[in-house]
Length: 164
Image 1 (cartoon, rainbow, N blue to C red):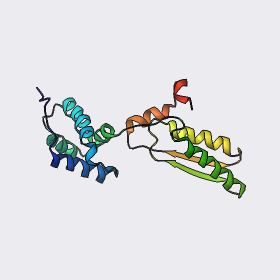
Image 2 (image 1 turned 135 degrees about the vertical axis):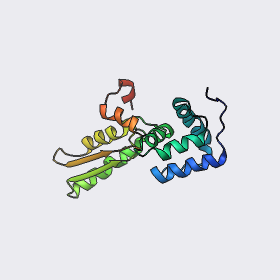
Image 3 (image 1 turned 30 degrees about the vertical axis):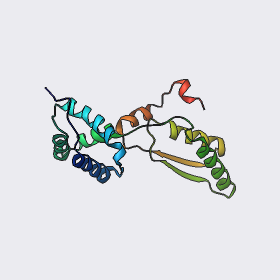
Image 4 (image 1 turned 180 degrees about the horizontal axis):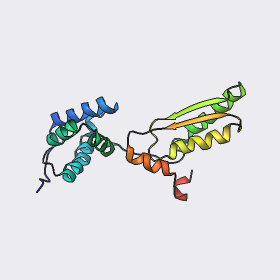
């Protein structure tokens, strides 16, 4: 039986922070300790492990990197919705129109934290509204969480999710 009262020691939390920063470039501050404890705690229970230190060993010894991916999926917070921070999309539309009026016809846009896809799809809508069809536009949508990228690829959203 797994001990439900496993404690994440400060030095072990620091090791998680270092690993996440080294592997993913994500800086976890002290305010994320409870999040890491809870989410990695779920991985401990799923894998039948008894300590956070044991989990760190599992991640380190997994040469395929599958558990590292699971760990990053677990600690990722995926907050997104269509037109999130809508003034950013207004500004993007203004820039696109200006650049097109100056003769630019090719655009490459990277949405680095695309989560389940609402933001890159909003970028696509903004592009469609701002530019003529003759423009060459490429949108790259990425995310550290492989779990949410699968949902983004589906591109299926309830009507209420698309409300501005």
